[in-house]
Amino acid sequence: MADPRRVEFGDFLRSRREKLSPKVVGLPAGQRRRTTGLRREEVAQLAGIGVDWYIRLEQGRTVSPSITTVDALARALRLSKTEHAHLKALARDGDKRAFTRETVPPSILRLIESLDHPAYITGRRWDVLAWNAAAEAVFAFGRLPEEDRNTMLLMMTNKQTRKAYGAAWADVAKRMVAMFRTTHDVWAGDPAFADLLARLRQGSPEFVKWWEAHEIRSTASGLKTMSHPTLGVLHFEHTSFQANDDPALKLVIYTPVKGERNTKTGHGPDG
Image (cartoon, rainbow, N blue to C red; front, side):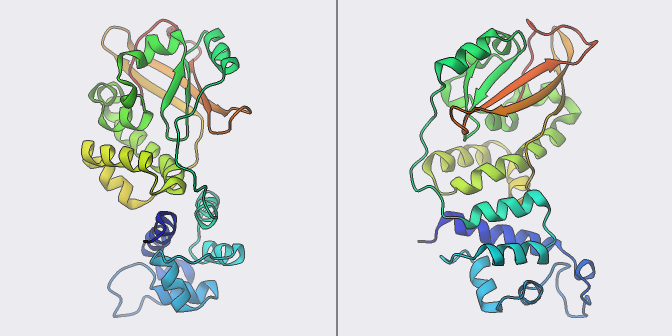
């Protein structure tokens, strides 16, 4: 059976190859070209590797490319810094242990409970593991079943979240799908991640379309605007931090934008 990580490695190569035009890399388009993307042999030539070897990589065969080969493929496919890092991560031998839900240390629990602004902790799979009173007031995590406390599920399958973002939902959700790809692919094949992926596919046709595009984005701070039926429009600046106790844990803090209504005790769904 093929290694799921190697399958994702090959799928990522294929997706980038098909999106790169010959003109960009200085190759003639040719009259018999069926698609606008590069051919496998062209990528192999640009990377300085054998065609058969490249085909094996794209097919997800159990082969281990060297860092030199990965770097050469990144240059050939004009990968961004984030895409290059993702390809390197997929090329490494993964952790063979099965995913287990993380536990939040008491010190971190006390930290988020001391914060006035909404704050919560997520794990590797983007499950919401802990949150403070301000986050409960805004996001109502406690009203959800434990299996539904996941930021991807909230964004892609929760009707209230979609309504809260209004016309901006598609842009926000698409970015989140691209960010989640970087996490999922290194855990590809793990039962917990496979279960989450199945729920997302079943619950959101938009997710299926964006997932197949295999876009990659890094996590970044930013602004979020959400609408609440009683509080109106809420504006937040959100940022996240990794925990030293366990790098799998991420602290997310939502700070009301200066000059906007105080939302410490407000309500409003979020992904």
